[in-house]
Length: 181
View 1 (cartoon, rainbow, N blue to C red):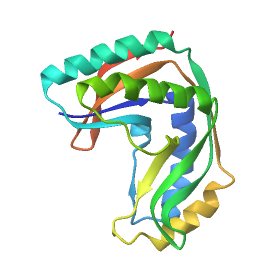
View 2 (view 1 turned 90 degrees about the vertical axis):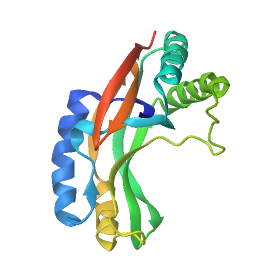
View 3 (view 1 turned 90 degrees about the horizontal axis):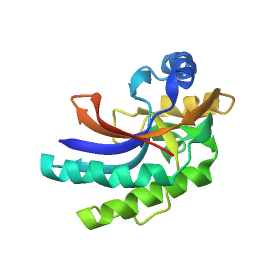
């Protein structure tokens, strides 16, 4: 199973993102767009995990959730990864209680370390991936989307749970949810 741990943003942000993505998609129709129902903030990508190890991951998350209060995030603005004139990835910005989100992500990473999942060596920066270029060098049309994103505001989301997802043929299946305290 290809697993990752994330938080979801709720129906209000999903509805605003759906409308925003329609506008952006018109600017870069060749990009691979994330379906609005799949939008999430990844805290940790685990990769291929067998069932026995997945059970231990769930147990680790059950230890993390009660240690963190729900938090409120806002989705607004954005940017691109890669060269500014032809980004490879388009993302929406995350504001609000990002310090609490960072603490949650760090706690998840620390709880997963004994299970053999090494934390990334760079600082966690929350972002909402919206689209990827089909070409490895990036997509010039996505640069126009970066400009358009600057004025976007997709609302606020109350994050109340951690979700262990499986990525299966472009769909995300929730294997476990753990409430925040």
